[in-house]
Image (cartoon, rainbow, N blue to C red; front, side):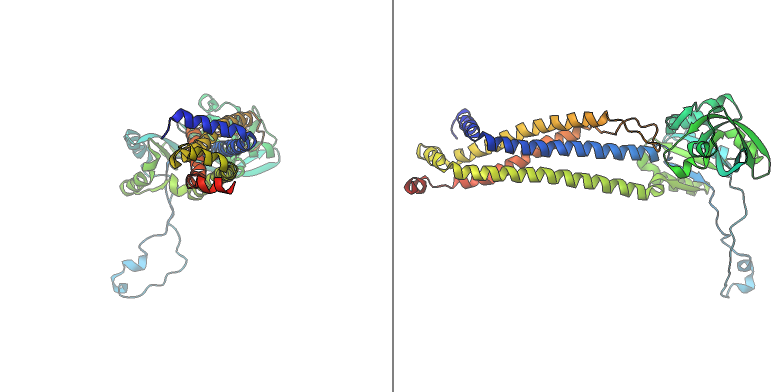
Length: 420
């Protein structure tokens, strides 16, 4: 191959002579890469936002007591009927409390497990909210608020007031946003709660909680764990759920099965609990990749067409170069260099375009009642997107220039000159 600097000089000279076509090809790459960066940054940012809303408040493993019918029916205990076929209708589940048996010892053991980052107990009460003449069905969750904040970012969902009021006042409640709206209540107001035992309790509203899920915000509220146990009329060992957060979420299915076998309790892992949601996230991400890669491929075809036409327009130049001693490999290198220059310049400007537009989107106010804690549109500035963008631009433009270059390499200068 001749001097590389001479090859580059010829490539650059030909590109400048057809500046309009070169500019169009570079713009095609720029907009392709730019749209790829914008779409991936926005779509993955949106997926992370939606995942955060659901998964941040979803424990990696949930432990609770599962109601089920008696496995051995009374008739099966009678020896004389063992050989008969039993037809039993309307089997009722076992009558038992919702609490977890030996919850406190289980809680203590799990907190010692190195795989467990933390465990929070909950006690759930079914109640009626009362304000004036308005009554609403609801659920009050007794929690340890400091652990909920540490493990599940609980305070991120408090739109008014302070989550730690549950530590300061026993009769404080964090009310769901849907409940407060329906009953025209705000922080500092009083609300009465009627338990299933017929006892009325008065609470001070210390904060408004909003998860972004209407079915949660319209019924749920949060109170101190001991207060929830008092409403139900049970002692401090009455716990209906244990929520675990692990150091490695991928271990949740295996650890859930282990806990079920050891403690004879229902353990629901996060993968099973959010199977449909995870599928939706994967489909959205796949669509983003397909659309983005399609944009890059379309830009590559544009470069191919431009370089292909450039070869026909440069037939005389190619013939002269070959006649003066340039080999087919040299001619091929000239057109590949042109494609790579277009790819690198278009790719870099595309990255800058994508980053600039992403920053603009990131600053656009995102105001919605469903997500009050989100102030702007979500953008994911993952460096891998930029690395993938410039890599794909170079590969795509190389291939777009390679095939026309092969054609230029095979051109016979004698036939071109004779045709002239």
